Image 1 (cartoon, one colour):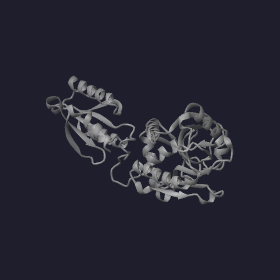
Image 2 (cartoon, rainbow, N blue to C red):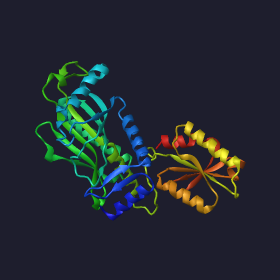
Image 3 (tube, helix red, strand yellow):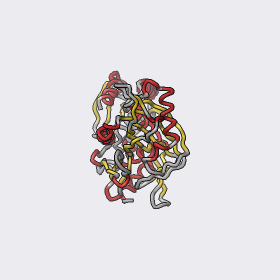
Image 4 (cartoon, rainbow, N blue to C red):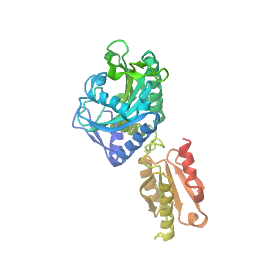
Length: 365
């Protein structure tokens, strides 16, 4: 692994995002508190994507997952999800349709090359698109394009992502496979999503009625597999490996585990109770608006050095916005400073405009 990426891993470990073990040829990574919070945001955005899908929930699996990526259609888990679709979501048991499932895997060997592996167990986010067989390839190209754009949207360096055909996996007509990979220069790449187009076995258990004609047909399946923990680590490395002079962790505003932080700036040796009460009130207001606030809510800085250290910590945690409450100014006229992680600049906002002002920023991002 390159020195540059090694420094990123060390920085992410210092700030509580992940832990890296270098006792093997391929490092093993484990998400820590902040990293797990980030992974939960990525999971939520995956759940919100393509909301017309049937979500079959979370299950555990002991099936071998190191076999051919096309072999899932012969597994018991795949048959069970089709049965569940017919029993609990009969109105959507047709073609085309879309199923989501979270698979908790306790024994897993990635079938692809990667610059690191996540410690087990891992969570696979699986999306199955059941499509008309004669339009399978058309749908496959559309899905891979949408998926690549999805990853680019959440990246600090969109050019990092590429679609890599897996031609060596082809097994005949109707089979296709690609990986979406995040490249990290000389260190290598990380596969963040696998997409496979697979024709179903010719069996009546797999037949679904056409949504327009009602005629039974044997669909093709496009399977998307995202390993949640590995993808989270890749996006965290992406946010750290940005080439800027700043040490900021450039996480997407929507995915950042904490969206804002609050710092009270004292002008006297002992902070006033009014400043503490105002900070606590603002924490409550932001949380009621479903904005994610870092830590216990707020921190008090007694001098310029403490303030600088606190802002640097917020930047390293990837927090997009810091709210700076001045003991004199904010208490007297309600004005505060809203500092941006990305620009390092601050704008003046009246406390009465929060949290609507922040919500508009995130909503329009």
